[in-house]
Amino acid sequence: NLGFDLLFQDADLIWWKSPWSYFAQFPQIDTFWMDDGARSARFAPHYPNTGFYLIRSSTRSKIFNNQLLGSYSLVLAWQSHQALVSQTLAEAHAAYGLSVQI
Image (cartoon, rainbow, N blue to C red; front, top):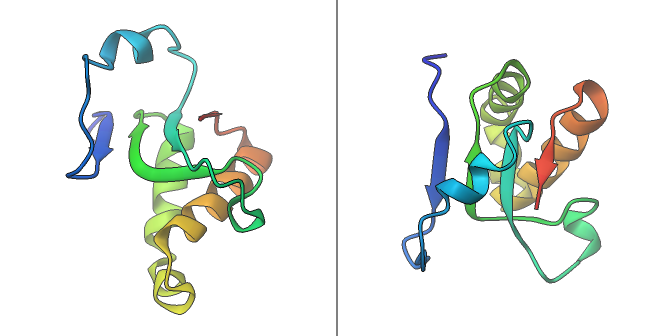
């Protein structure tokens, strides 16, 4: 709600150069995600990996964040935050046009 973009990365991820110029090329994209690479059906259709992600401050991303944070009990039940992210991304993209870049 404060208007900040959020860039998250795992502790074992290293940027060889600053990603900000890449992200700046796509101002219309709400969210950027690392590619899962495994292509398992569990993470379809976008196959996001939570190793790094950028969530821009937008109305759509605020709805997405609220849905994600309100579903923490599913992380415990499914034993995977990545599965919840994948499902919530797909639903948000279909329901209100959250843009997703992998």
